[in-house]
View 1 (cartoon, helix red, strand yellow):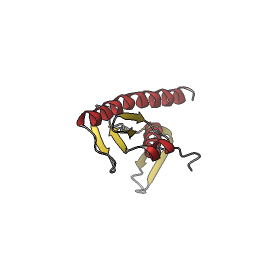
View 2 (cartoon, helix red, strand yellow):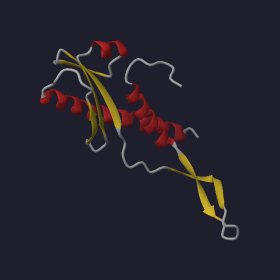
View 3 (cartoon, rainbow, N blue to C red):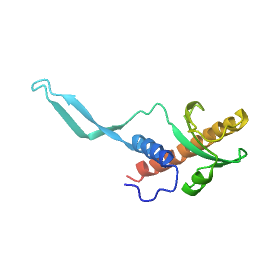
View 4 (cartoon, rainbow, N blue to C red):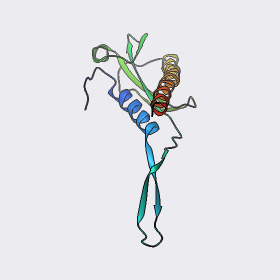
Length: 138
C-alpha cells in the first residue's frame, strides 16, 4: 500500500526491498531421512547473504543546467529531463534510465552517477543502522 506518492516511487521501492532482504531470516530446514519430508526448525534462523546492495537515485534536470536529486511530482512535471541511476556498494553503475527529455552533456550525466554513488553509501549506512538497531533490540 502506498500512503503518499510524491515522486520517485522506484527509488522508494528498491530501498524498501533492500531493507526487507537485509532483515529477512530463513529457518533451518532439514530432510527427515526416514520420511523424506522437510522439517523446519523455527528456533534456528539465519539472515540472507545479500551480495549486492543496489540503490536507485532519481534526478530532475531543469534548463540543461540545474539538477535536483529526489524530485517531487511537481518538480518532475516541470523538468526538461528525468534520470534514474542505480548503483551498488562497489560504486558500479547497475543501470541508467533517461526516458527522453532534453539532451545532456556527458559531464552532467557523470555528475548524476557520482551523486548516485554518494547516495548509495548514505542509504546503505542508514539501512544498516536501522537493521542493526532492530537486531539489538530483540
